Image (cartoon, rainbow, N blue to C red; front, side, top):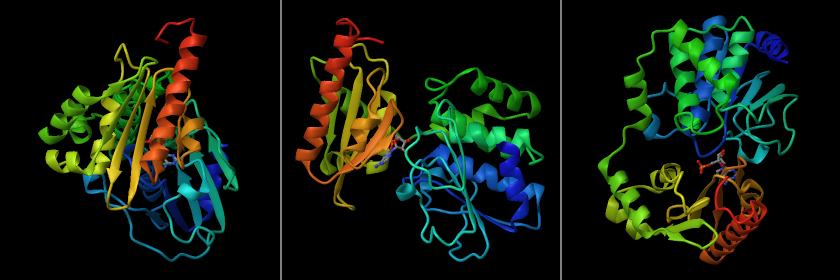
Length: 319
Ligand code: AMP
């Protein structure tokens, strides 16, 4: 499959690489690492990484602003379904390849390389590069490293022997400046840490082990934190004894909706998120709802999932 993907890349003079809306470091890293590897292997090709960026990720190379192409190959990374691809004219491509680590939702590519046991889309791009003549140099290695480290939250999640083997090879082969790379992804303003403290103090924890908090626009304004960064704090609440699923509901006044972030250390949550205009991984999902009543319904379903999970585990609130 990886060699087949390489053959197709080789055939096209123009390659456009897209990923999901709501950009995150792994989505960006996988598209940028692939762009650089293709450009370095085939300097005469036009290779573009497209989609809406974010100032938060300025430490990555820039995205490309192109909207027109002809006879181009589209590669979509880190995206399981068509509606979440961050691109305007999706149907204007000669061939489409999907490279993804989310659980399968639908087929939209002519060729799809999916491994939902992989830590990250960046790890899949690493596999593609190392299984084919695509160039892996220090710049590409750094981007892949950032993608894997951030999507696994420093190897807390979805990290298996293949993940560690990839990281070992990157470190053996390249002199990566780890303190610098870590500060790129993990440095954050004090405001965010203070909001994290607010969440810890105010999170409601149900008797079934569901932690939930509604973060209003007023609270975000008070702490000086935007909605994306507020939702991201979800990643800092794992391994709390009394909490097995945790959810933040953040008011997004600009888009007139409520942004939901959910994490779990047991119950499968993505099928619940899918019912609320969302989806994601088994234990890490997101959703968007338009009213607090919907958010409450989602919270109730998550609480029910916790309850069922505890019953299945024989009454123990742990996995
Ligand atoms: P987040 O909580 O935003 O970091 O998202 C966790 C996971 O859920 C990622 O794999 C996202 O791609 C996915 N996800 C987040 N929001 C949505 C949504 N509205 N629809 C589908 N998947 C989502």
